[in-house]
Amino acid sequence: MLYTHHGFGGGRKKGSSINNLIGLQESVQADCYIMGHDHKKIATKGTRLSISKSGKPALLSKQISFARAGTYLKSYLDGGRVTYSEQAGYPPVPTGSIMIEVGIHKSGKRDELYTKVQE
Image 1 (cartoon, rainbow, N blue to C red):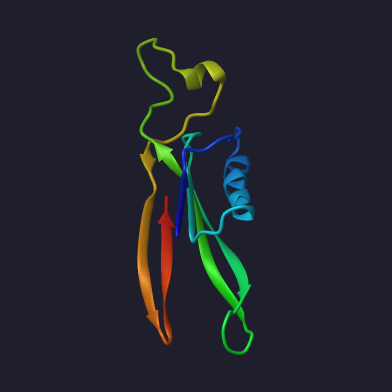
Image 2: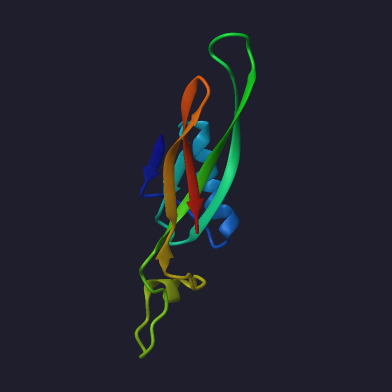
């Protein structure tokens, strides 16, 4: 499952931005979490542990992805024009977006969704 949201918060550092996103797993279970809002382009992975629901109980590990979606809005401009980012003193961010690959792993008894996120 993909969880997407316009986004909120952010902060000036990459760590605070991605931590806001990672915190979503406390309330929403997904394979990939994607947010915008703060114009940063960041991707990272995490691991979710669970117990199998059928058969002999077993510990299962699943890779999950987190990404801030990026922007195509230039934060600083030439020619004397001042942007909101410049007025607020935000650091410049590169323009562009993340790339998300979604697919199915065929393995054994059940197929599994996988996500791969790249900056």
